[in-house]
Length: 445
Image 1 (cartoon, rainbow, N blue to C red):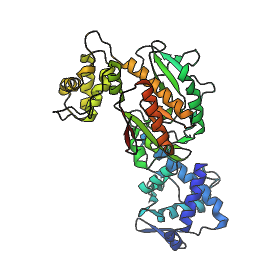
Image 2 (image 1 turned 30 degrees about the vertical axis):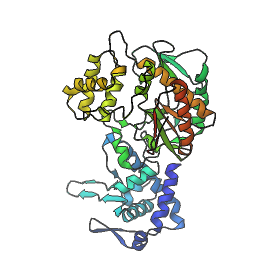
Image 3 (image 1 turned 180 degrees about the horizontal axis):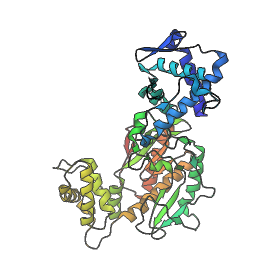
Image 4 (image 1 turned 120 degrees about the vertical axis):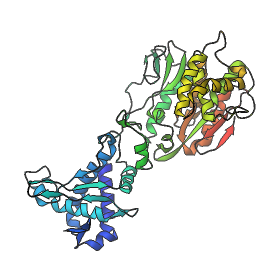
């Protein structure tokens, strides 16, 4: 349906285009050489033109979607012999193909031809040649993207997959990687867990989609190592609590494809073609650490270390790795790799660790007799998440939880902020935490 509609939209653009209309009846010039005469677009040849256009758009969008194939062109015969009854293109009109290809070369987006044409060649002495090739220009690829024709699993559309009988509780062996789903945990949902099927049903009706801004964004999110898009081909839609080792340990909410999107892609998510907003708790895990120790939060920016020039990103890495590691040695080792990724010296990992935890010495982990606090932090974080989902469900507001943030339709930003404020206060009363949105707004709670 997208392909058919896109072909119709483009067809109306090219047949009304001034340059195309001015060249009807004239030879089309390609590489300073006159080629075939452009014939007129008429109601009589409309269906044949549209069929030809659909084939061209489909082929171009296919190679643009599969970057690992490293293709730029599609070969297309522009002579009558390529469209006889014994050819693969017998169902396509040759005059229509010729008309559409040359019109797309004349039609311009951002002062560039929609299609570049590389004329075919033929060596009479060798009896060999190369068929004409066409390439979509960058503005054309942006047009493909905006029409939804650039798909990670082209030609399959990214349907959202819902299990007939969803599993809302899962248990996986201690230490198993986060990306792997655990086995079903067969017990009744308890307390706020009962919001999970309600929230999932709300998301199912919300018709989530991810329109991309331009083709460059698609290219930037292609994994050359894995030969696939990071923007997800299979969109599994689920919501479940994931416990580690035994029931009650951890309990974060996973399962929805939006949670696996790169952070910079989530801003383009839409609910029923309406824009979204993401609100997140700022410094949530550090705030919860102070709450668990029963210590008031220090004033000021939590990720700024006085007397140093360490970035907020580096300080957040210390916290994230520390709370999930069993020792300082293990933390420093992992932190060194993070610093390298930030183009900083790995040898400064120990210095950064000490600077950060000297600043937050009251909640410093890895002291004698203490365990990594990540399970306890995840447990309370999950409880807050479930409570926020309850507040939103009471107002019929669809939401995707992503650890310490929530994606909702933009029109419900105020309601989501209020739900997050109340949800946090229910489990960490007296602790102040900032709530920020993708729009740049922030408020204390």
